[in-house]
Image (spheres, rainbow, N blue to C red):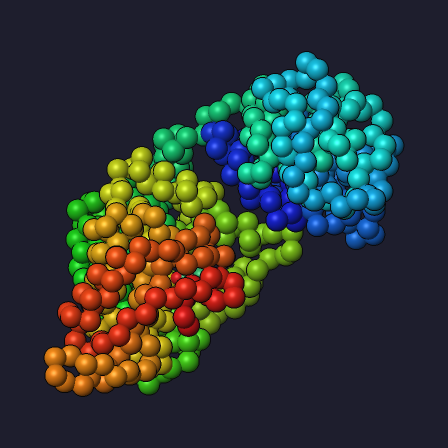
Length: 506
Ligand code: XMP
């Protein structure tokens, strides 16, 4: 188990992911709120930071329980912090030290650099530089511009590096992390999807005992994997609720419900389409749509949860990035604050919360899902927004518009699958525009709806680019949509990147 102390660097999550890729479990804690008990940790990594160590308000953690007691790797800000307060000197650098650099000197025979060649590329991102090393330090590496690119403290297992080993541009970064964690700190590499499943199922069994648990399934990867894990632990004491809000993809409710039942889940499908669509009637503002859907979902879910007698727990598919976000250096998020308001909450939200995936990244959830034997097609699904098709129908929502968009979306998505393009796209869908355009079919003039197709590549949805789908494919799909979907006579393709556009149109 490795502890990562976060000083607010944009790369901290990446550090954790690289460590996990080595099959080593790690946890991120904000520097100002570290774990009280360090006994289970085998090594500590200090992250980078947007701060300068010379700034008044810079993070100033107490490392007395860590330094010299546990193997320590200090990255960027961490390296400067150790230097600045221990007899070294940190000063603003004369030249901008940002971007690619190469290791021009590596100390011979140093295990930290085993398997790393001279000239290896590293990624720098700092405006201060370590002018003088701290007491007891030995220089381990330099670049052309950064003399003290890496050092260690004699007599301790304390290593410090100015560059970021976690970013892809540091070509041997992962090797250095492995050298430090495995060779030097001797941390066992025993965190695998299988070991995770074994441990968490046992933990859930003990924690939940004979209690009943309710969980909302969405058809997405996270809630599905959470359900299968809980099902392994407590069987039919897990009550799953899958709500149809009438805004899912074509036939999705029936298909996915069927799949859930085949997986042996104790699941109840609740078709609340009419309730959602009647509440949405006449609303065209995107945020009001979202709020309405959120409110109706809570009402429907609460009604259903009340029908389970003696339920004690609410299970959620929360994953690690959401957890880190809510405990980050920048302070707790709004969701954490909601418990101040318990009185006004629906009953199910007052239940104890269990989150089996709260320590996993998205790609780890998928691997755990594969270990559990979940259908790869389900695990490889594109993200789909909670408010569903409502935010892809611009303007007000009617059952007829939902039907049209479901048909269009189905042709597009099925086409992507049939042409082997689905897995090359991060997210795809269709948008129904609130305009009619003139067309001609046979001898008749038409005046019908326009739909837009959107397909993007991305890693996390924060930034995205449109996918260069083959013209032949677009031609075929456009023809099929116009020929088959009554009410549509024009198809356009969205070629906007995010930013400045967003993925969804609303
Ligand atoms: P945008 O449109 O902000 O979308 O570029 C980024 C990602 O978030 C999804 N998205 C949502 N998901 N509720 C959700 O659960 C929402 O209200 C919502 N809005 C956008 C979107 O599908 C994309 O994956």
